[in-house]
Length: 113
Picture 1: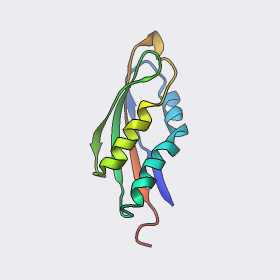
Picture 2: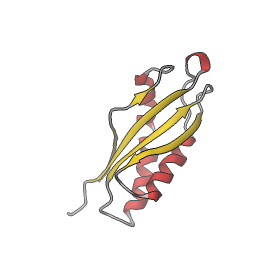
Picture 3: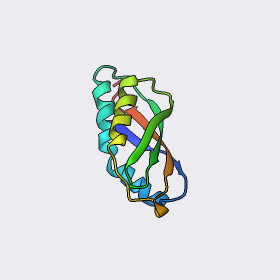
Picture 4: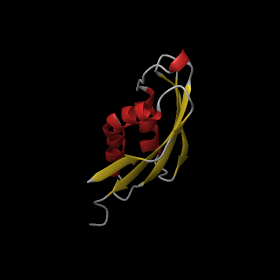
């Protein structure tokens, strides 16, 4: 089975890291779907995609982009960004913005079998 997991991530002040992590983990299946779609074209696809996104004062995503990728799959990367842009989080304290840097690690545990 395919796997997607998050790694250690960073964020600026305004929201609790545990809350942000929980909200991302609840949506990992959306990100996994991006990976599964591209795996059908390339079963040896794997890597880490680090995304940077800004949670705006209302809790909606103000901006999101790929910061770094070892996967090199435009299909996975653009799909992940589209999914993230639709997410909402709790409103940051003081309704400021929160910058989040989050790595998604993708591995096909069926590859080569």
